[in-house]
Image (cartoon, rainbow, N blue to C red; front, side, top):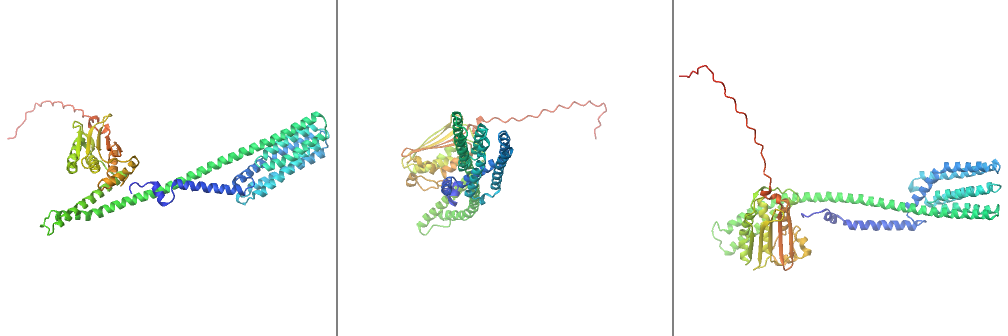
Length: 518
């Protein structure tokens, strides 16, 4: 109840954080696989759409530059072909460039959920083929005299086309095919070895451009994958933050409900419990006469002992809840740790003697005072000694040590020869209401709140709590209080003494006679 955490609340309200992350990952993988199976490119629909969007942006932004390039080629071709033929070729190329640019802008203006990717991909491929056919008309312009000019113009057109269509590989291949055929056809206008070598070099260059476009395509896909993974991570972080905020809110509500419950039940339980303790004590002591049956006196003792046990349990729960809520206020004053330990040892001596146990005390009585809460220190020592007596078998031994630490603080060590605690149960015994397996079998009934309360009180004093135990070798608890709590190490407070007031100057004696009243 007092160890409520965000993870416990989330487990109580739904799947754990790891389970939720695993389910989210599986759902994402299934969705990705389904989209890849229904895609013609083997990628997710979002990737296909993003690649087409890149292609449309490239085509829409390069229209003016390509148009000027076509006009420049047509102007240069007028040196060996008539102006009408050059202008007709330039107009054809310009129209296809305009058509592809308008189609790209239309794609960019369409809502993503209304886009038919297959249809738009076919449109782009057809547009690329028609535009490449227009560029291939350069063969007619250069065949009559500008053979070399036409060859290099086709190579430049191939480079531009493959780079612009790199994000749609099928469009790049379809656009390069007419240009390659036109390049090879230039051999019909020249049969020399030099011409063949140039055509071969141009063809190799076009193949290189095609490979480069594939590399650009792979690089773009990799960038999209990286961005998708980053977006997925951001989405998971946002979801995790939302889950954490919700779990924290629920934990705060549960903690508030627990505090209200404890505050209410404390009063509701203590009021009738005090009456039970009072009446049972009257019956136990036979204040109004002896019982008719001797068993009634034993029953009265049992009632009183059970009531005291319940009252102590309620007090421990309230103390632990105040410690965990940070509302436990220390009433600090100078305290002798050795004196507190001796008082507690005398209190527990009868219980130890009843079980035939031997208590070895090594207490340094010369220790200076500590600035601490005496009630908290007494509760720490009593809880540790009570556990030692409880878990030590009859005839066992208990060692009690109090002394200096290496750093100038003071320590308290309680060691017993009990059954010990397995290593895997140390966390259990330190949790609220936690009890080890050996303790359940061998020890008296307890609430399991002693050690958590001790640890909380020690940490409130700025100290350290250490638990060491091994099965069949006993248990040792070491409590260390810092040197800052030792009175001898505290700096003395200095008070500024007021400056002495200057003595008043003696008044001059008057020469007038003083008259005395009769």
